[in-house]
Image 1 (cartoon, helix red, strand yellow):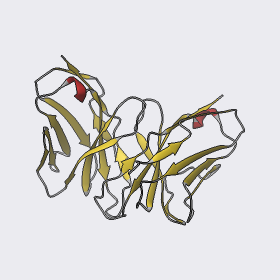
Image 2 (cartoon, rainbow over the protein chains, first blue to last red):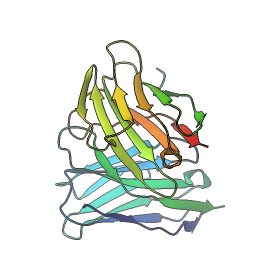
Image 3 (cartoon, rainbow over the protein chains, first blue to last red):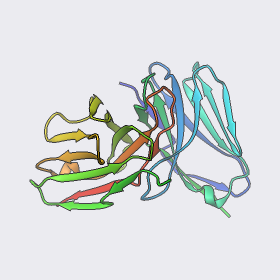
Amino acid sequence: SQKIEQNSEALNIQEGKTATLTCNYTNYSPAYLQWYRQDPGRGPVFLLLIRENEKEKRKERLKVTFDTTLKQSLFHITASQPADSATYLCALDYSGGYQKVTFGTGTKLQVIP
Amino acid sequence: NAGVMQNPRHLVRRRGQEARLRCSPMKGHSHVYWYRQLPEEGLKFMVYLQKENIIDESGMPKERFSAEFPKEGPSILRIQQVVRGDSAAYFCASSPSGQEGTEAFFGQGTRLTVV
């Protein structure tokens, strides 16, 4: 079965630096890869989606890359702020038809002022 | 435009009781998904519904669990004869269409505790 690996350890980073989170997967590549943010006690919030034929996607301070050869996606937050502290989830979309995604366990990011 | 509304936010049930979780999708959304999040685990897909139809229930346990999305009213996830292992956060998401790559909007979740 598909396995998704995200940094299990929490990531601590100084305010203003770039945070880089990793998502690795096994088996075949998904049609889409999504990144979500989840705060404690809340539901996930969609951030970015990247298609398998796209190498990179940007949105404001966020950047996602998708390397189907390495079976890896990197999620970058530039000029990080304490408000960026949250758990970030990688999700793989294989359905090709609807939002049936497989989530990773997430990486907890802590931005230190 | 209110987001996805789930209720109750917290639900405590004794073993053997029934749990009913409700989800009202965003206005204009006719596609609903249910996910379960166990402690220290990722969200797991349970079921995908459109109005009055179950499209994909491959992630839902065969026994005791059922879901519906009637023509009128919220989507309901029903768990009969709950057991301790059912304790988890249950999230509902909705999307305006079932097209590939469509963004889904999640509710705040219902935290079920079975005592």
